Length: 371
Ligand code: PMP
Image (cartoon, rainbow, N blue to C red):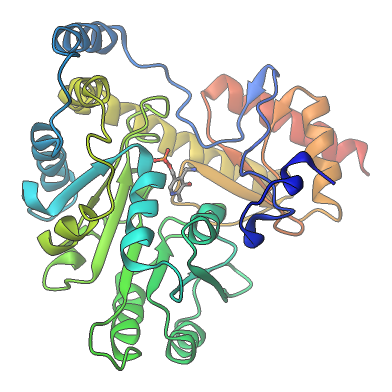
């Protein structure tokens, strides 16, 4: 019996483990889809300046509505997402995990359900559980694309309150096409006899790495469609904890009902604003990572692995009889990748060219040893 079990915790949390990839001290860490490039020095200095300014007013609470930050995020989305977005259509929180939590607190909750197509980002299910929202696991094809017919049937039968569409999908890297999102959105609205419809959340945490344009323009005229984004990946700022969403202004009003007052510290807002001043430089790193991602796909295939087409900054590769044993064997060569529990498959994050070379050498060595 763990010491937690002696506590009067909620029944659905009993026997569960917290989410988290191992944080091991190994030479090459390619397991959490981080950006391998540290922030450039001029940006580090600009953050120091803006945080210094913020520090002079730390006796005051931060801007509760984070208006300047939301305005800059809206400008970034307008510039890169193929759709004009206004400040009142953007909301920000401490990582897109918190954005998702606020959405589930607002649109899910006890007596309600959320649906996702698995394998996908496991936090969608875990945050659902944490907010008392029932979780429904929807199907995917063997190649990890979404089977529109099976998906719309599941939505019609289960009538979820929230539907997650992760594009590009973690851990498989699979992008979802516009037509699929539209079909699922229509199904999710039609399934609800109460006429209120269901919320559809497109999780675009890896959107900037995709070969395809963002799904952002689909929010136009669809009041129940939300696109969530993060500065953890493309902006190389996982330590900052800044996620955001774009949607109809009514969705932004609705999440105010559950957000904690002053949830985004002045230091967070100042740091994110500094990073947004350097968007162009940061997006150049994204271009390099996309090229490295494509190289990983090509070279893993050449080495004899099966590889799922990837639109993200990571690649799912296999097929291994015992994926966990292969994970360990790659680790024994000094490279940490991720075993997401998808039978036969492992996931590697695109790192620097040198890190990717080390990873590819490790995989080739492991494949040779297993012959
Ligand atoms: N969505 C997806 C699909 C992710 O993979 C992640 C991070 N692993 C997140 C959301 C959350 O990211 P963050 O909270 O750092 O913004």
